[in-house]
Image (cartoon, rainbow, N blue to C red; front, side, top):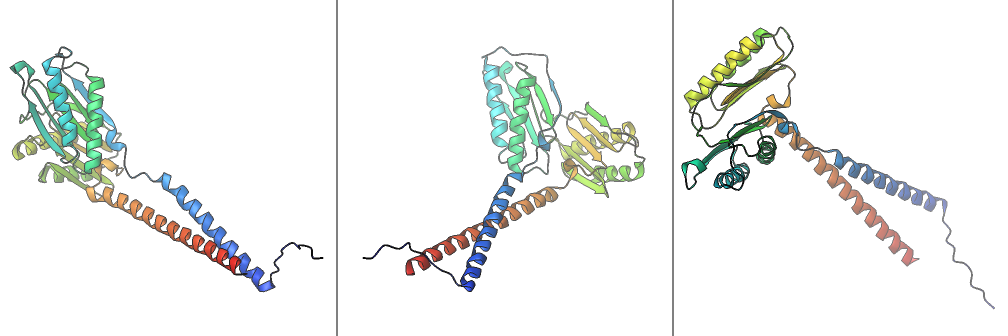
Amino acid sequence: MHYNQPLTRTYSTQQSIELMAKTQTNLFFIIFIFLSLSYFPSFSLSSSSADFFLYGGCTQQRYTPNSPYELNLNSLLTSLVNSATYSSYNNFTVLGSSANDVVYGLYQCRGDLAMPDCAACISRAVTRAGDLCPAACGGAVQLDGCYIKYDNATFLGVEDKTVVLRKCGPGSGMTGERDAVLTGLANSGGYFRVGGSGELKGVAQCTGDLSFAECQDCVGEAIRRLKSDCYAADYGDMFLAKCYARYSTNGAHVYSKAHAGKSDNDGEKTFAIIIGLLAGVAILIIFLAFLRRICEGQGK
């Protein structure tokens, strides 16, 4: 009579060493994958600094709810948000059945802001204006990365050097270097200007509805006021109604050039891709090792 004996498999010393090596290798790859995947949530490829609220204002004149003006205003604000997906500046005029229903508006993003960030910033500015200026015929909101304005009185193409925000930091004594950077901005061309020397960075921008001569005049006035009002300060912001000039000695993101911000994001994306590829290779190796073990078990 034969009894069924339990099936056992014996390993030589060399086979045991090879099995342990395989187990350790597989364990290493499993740990590597876990650590790699746990790294992904730590990436932040978009900066929230563009959404920082700087100032806002509303006109005292108000419209009647559900009036033609409100419908036109909603149409204009929608146009601002949609346009910001492909252009960093635009202005619109929505006509009505009467002169009282006409609404004017514009938006502008900071010149170094990527288009997806521009669109997100304008969308948040529009939302903020709705909260800040309910039923007001006109309003303006300046976030760190973008600006919107709308009104029932035309302001497009009109230079306005009214001071709407002035902020000065504590003293640092870097007046010579600061004045050199600001003078460089004043003498630069274009509607968006950046410059710097060492840790001191500066930026200036005009709204796109101004002519080049008006832009030069507006930026020149903002810089003149910065030099006089923020004397020896380590940072300064001077926002006029149609332009601004800013400087900082701490290398803040708002003063970095466009390619600098993009290179940081591109580096993070590249590293994430590399980690993903390595994790994929590790998974493939483990899968092949698992198939090989099954095949070896079936052959014995």
